[in-house]
Length: 122
Image 1 (tube, helix red, strand yellow):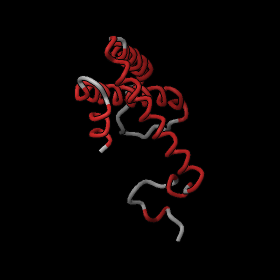
Image 2 (cartoon, rainbow, N blue to C red; image 1 turned 45 degrees about the vertical axis):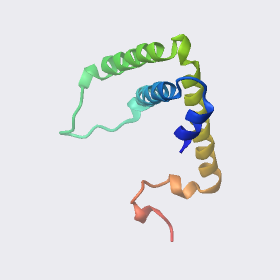
Image 3 (tube, one colour; image 1 turned 90 degrees about the vertical axis):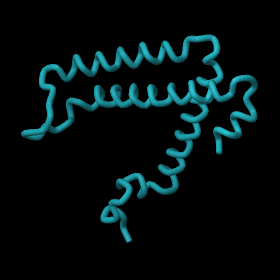
């Protein structure tokens, strides 16, 4: 629905701008995941028999972060990328506001994963 509204409201090649925005948003998500992993990696527990990169964990994570920065620069530096960047920023702001609303008004829903009914207090 939002895509249709944006296509009507955006001048020019709206579909191309939405496709570009839809490539930027996953790159932001993947980059955020790498940054989060780097921030909390020391506190993560290790399980015997689970996949582990061992001493290569940090170099692989740093390479992934550098790759995401290169990919983001390719996506956001062209002159025609301003509108898709604004769309992505708007979507991130709306998502952030939704999260803050959940944090303020329905904190219990954030304490469990979907489908985990045992975590909810009845």
